[in-house]
Length: 186
Image: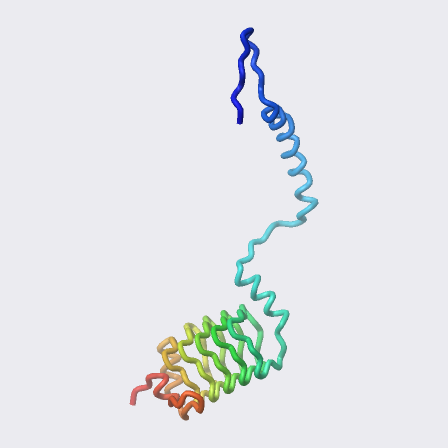
């Protein structure tokens, strides 16, 4: 901004920009304060990018997604109980706090999936590939896991032990036994 200019007789001259800012800026602020509540009724709520993407994903959910290409999709708090995701490509997908109870994930590719605090109770995971999956705080009570490959998956120790108690079969695609992929002892 230009500095004030003082003339020989002692008067000060301001630049046109300064005069404009001093005169117009307070009026502009007042207009915005009055107009803002009319433009944006109600309180503002923050939303995170994953929540925004999750809302968009929820619009695309269908109970039968057999064989679909869903790799790298995000499912945040997704209600997918009983969904058919058999043979779906879910590589790199994110299922945070989602409900996949009784879902059919048989022969699905869940490699590199992140499923934090997700419910797989009663899900059909027979023949699924869950290599390198991050499955912390997820639950698998009564899930069918015959022939599932959990190689290098990260599971909570109690879940890993419970899965080992019923691990059988060998994955048709990878040739890895379910017990070996879970690093079961004995």
